Length: 133
Image: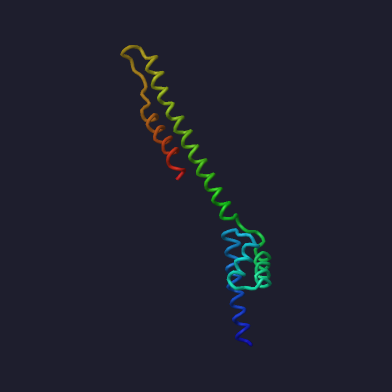
């Protein structure tokens, strides 16, 4: 009988580890984890008690995998947009070149903001094409 209890304790420990990982790391719902535990061979009562222990021991869990993916996509979108806007702003250096050329006297000097134009174009394209990486 002692060996049987030892085996049951080992299985419960395995179920607990699995449930804790799914709950804390992947953000799965308790109902889904109970269903997974039953699918692994646990009876319904054991699965529910294991899940109750996990929730009791870890009341605050992190965001689910889906929530983390959505947040990452939003962060990348923000990076992309900011690169595009900064790039467009630097491209305005081309306007500086045009204005300074138009106000310069014939044969006079004027500013050519080539670095700002090229840098702005590269940054803007990088923001548009890179996906925020």
